[in-house]
Length: 230
Image 1 (cartoon, rainbow, N blue to C red):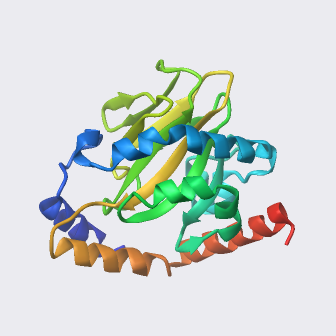
Image 2: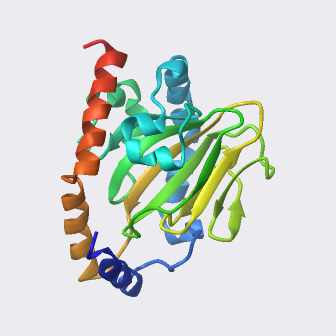
């Protein structure tokens, strides 16, 4: 944590993409391929949603997130993250996993579900060496009732559309509609020039061994044992 401010400055200096809160998708040439296959991903999501009530609240996996979410209104279904890969969940969504391989530097992938009325408090991600992608899968409303604010910009999800932002900017999200909102939630390594790309890669590998992440790994494994019954 002590070296993060230095590394974040390094990342901003050597970034291959603009240092902005919300990105123009043209900066990432692989985005159209992801958007073309969104209905395939949505079909596999429907399989997961048949057991929605069994999915964990986000803070059940990462307790430190209790500062921004305390109820069960934000649920997740993780394919990969925290340095682990869920073979059972990938087996349930093989086409989604195939499509995700098109994203360079993939580190986290999950379905992120907001229940009706969910409000995620303003917060900041810990590090700018990763960027966040949301692919709209179930979007009940494209007005300000269902939206995300990143920095000073309010953005709206759309089904089949990718939104990429830097979660190290303060952000908050909400679903004021009466239906669920679901996105494919992805973190991937920020495109960087040398030497920042090497430093970033090493730091992300080290982070996978932190106490915070190890606790999340244990919680995820326990949940999977209950969910899959083995």
